[in-house]
Image (cartoon, rainbow, N blue to C red; front, side):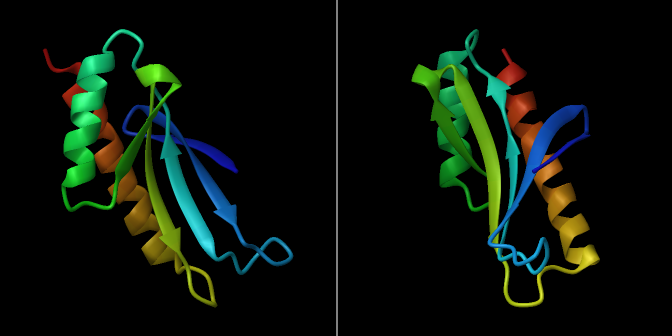
Length: 106
């Protein structure tokens, strides 16, 4: 697990299915948002995000008090190139920030 941040938001990068700490088969970017003060709005934004055709999905947990935006990738043998990693990092950061911005709107 790697803890990182971009666009003012903390998030985590998980690698799994690795052999000897390399050649991983799965890569996941995960954000975590406290929705306790905006449960209804978080659910609405999550529902809208999940029905759109974008790579980011949002899971609502903790009776609606927590939202976890995530982007999950299956990798083939050989892992992921630096270019593709950066592209997906930026893509996740963009959609994660959009989720936050939409929830913040009144």
